[in-house]
Amino acid sequence: MIPILLLVIAAASAESCSDEGCGVNFLQSATRLQRTDTEDVWPSARGSWPFLAVGKDSGPFQVNSSLAWSWHHPEGRFHTLTWGTALDHQLNVYLSAADGLRKFDPDGKVLWEHKTLPARLINAPAIYKGAVYATDTLGGVRAVDMATGERLWHTQMEPTVGEDNGFSMVHAGVVLTAADWRPPSPQGEANQKVRALNASTGQVLWTFTPDTAVWNFLPLFPDHETVVFQDMSGRVYRLGLFDGREIWKAGGLEGSWTDGSAALGGNGLIYAVNNNKPLAEIKNLDATVPGFPRDTNPGTLSAYDLDGNLKWQVTTPKPPNNAPAVGKIHGWDGLSVIMPICQQAYQGATCDVYAHDADSGRLRWVFNGPTQKGLSQAGDLAGALERTLSGIRPACLPNGWSAPAIGADGTVYLGSEEGPFFALRDADRDGRVLGEQEVSYFQTGAAFSGSSSAAIAPGMVAVASCDSLFVFKN
Image (cartoon, rainbow, N blue to C red; front, side, top):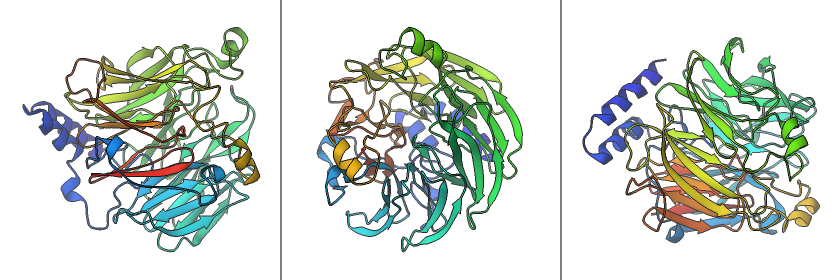
């Protein structure tokens, strides 16, 4: 609990600072001076604990003019699917892809490749104490040596793990992963269990079965002793990190499904998302794309304290379909929740980004993103045949947005299903993010998986679209 209390104190101090930039520097860079020479800069797709999804450093805002290098599979950009990135203390980039793991030096040279086919990797990577961690579709979890790319251990959990896009996360020597892909769930087949493994040996420590299956699993850590996450209905769980005992559960809408995941704020609040109708009801009554809610189906963003008490809720006008990010954003005091909203796979649908006050839920600003032009998201249909022939699934099946991340200067980074990678900030505090002073983007030509998130380092941002890796530098 001590780290969370320190963050609350930092937030209070930030609000008392009269200079706009002071709050950003104090709150989001409070630990910058404490970073050791060997501390990994962005060790998971959601950054470093306890400032998950929030950088201790600032990357370039003008991403349209700061691309340093990019990579796609040497046999063609559609030859694999790329999921997420991590950065070590030397700014080497670790990329997870359907066909394996890769390590790049800061200038884009491939240092090693760890191939996994026919087992396909399906989530963003995590690095921890010299190892890279990932889960595969054949039910395995593996640790790979960061220096050499050689396998350290492999644990077989289940016959299969689902190809929804989750996040590999490691904390206090424990690896958390979803497992056991099968019915039932509102969405059909889904991961029914959460498993914890010893990060050094791969030994299974415990297994927990939530009330409803998990989807795009993202475990979060309020301290060194517990873990929180949500299931596909938006129900939040807090468990013992080392024994899996249930401490509490709260919220959710029975029978509903979301592509979203939870977030943890430095104010000690947990933010969960859900859609506002059971999926069976949506499918029967008003879906125009089979298996999905309508693009205008509302959802809910809920804030809970660490004891599971509901603090506030707001209705989102569209499905809240990825994990929020919680941090200090440019031009606004205190903490904000960045919530990507939309339902992917609807031609003509628009995806937006909402910023809410993290303590009250009050809306702060809106960014109206691109409209889906084609029958599917950017690059998905075009690469179907090549992906199939290369032994991976034919489509990325992305969320409408990647998972957002926030730089130390308050810039919000995220990628769109239509291909642009955006840098956003509400410079004039008018509640609309609009114009070249507030919006910068780089067109990648492909959508972004839900587990993709910008990895932020000093003057640098690395992000994976569905088929390529892009690195931007000042």
